[in-house]
Image 1 (cartoon, rainbow, N blue to C red):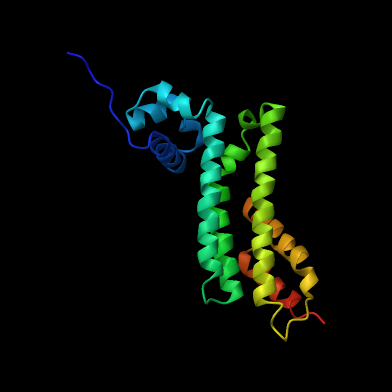
Image 2: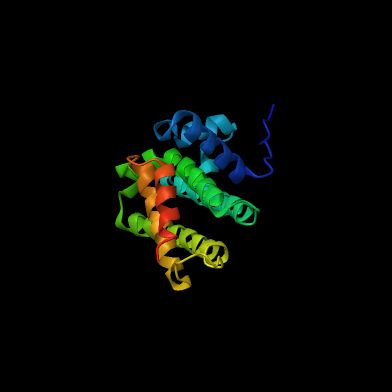
Length: 192
């Protein structure tokens, strides 16, 4: 009896979904190409067709998260909520991402080749800069249109950079509660 290969509608999506599930449930150390193949009930070679290395799979997972994150940000930005509520929601989603991938970012295996470091950092910088631009537009739209705001519109990019860099720092090194940072932002908005 000949066993026919199983047809999978979207194998790349299946692989990414199972890898995300493993990362979320068990952590980076439990992710291996063999383990993912077993969870997907597909051949190891099928995974290598889409992701030649574990590093490329992880980078793709991060990229997928960023796409989802910017979709969620778009919904948050366009809501009728107060700017500080919007910033908190953006922070919360970023915190989830950073905590999920923290062990990956700290793993030396991920940064083993200069090409990989350069491409990984370049991609990371693209997304961080995109996030800064989103916050800059939010600030211009919501804070700097406010007659009571003392902060100049041209300061929006610097303020957005300040917010994002502090978000990342607070998540990676939790020495300050978000509420304290929010109070600082509110005071900065009222400076003469």
